[in-house]
Length: 148
Image 1 (cartoon, rainbow, N blue to C red):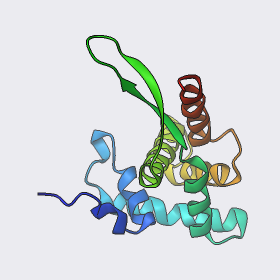
Image 2: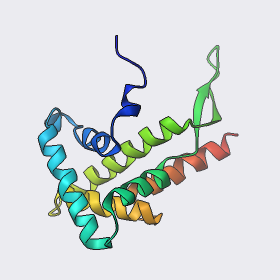
Image 3: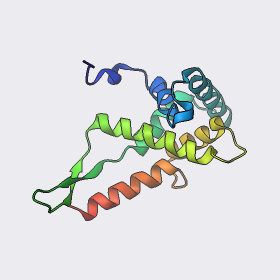
Image 4: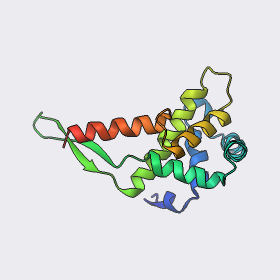
């Protein structure tokens, strides 16, 4: 029996490292994920001269969608209904989006995963729309708005 919100007590940087261990070939390689996060934080510090943890927190705040659409319906009639997201799910979803954006950016690319993740986090912390996570968040919120 797993405790339900146990991951809430886990440090946010470790959660980010765990999000990087997705897609079969990377699963379970936590040392690799931790090294990527370490390099990422160093790169962020060099690029922005800010506290890298603060940049990560800002990125998570900016890239968590505020509302989502869920499927409501019975007897074969399925319609989407807009719902507010819980703060906990916002954090989880933001981490997922940031990790996915960095993974897609570094795939078949000369840039390392750490560089892509640093770029993604900095863009998301600034709220600029060339971050994958911010684009996705806007898209999710737009769909939810149309389903109100």
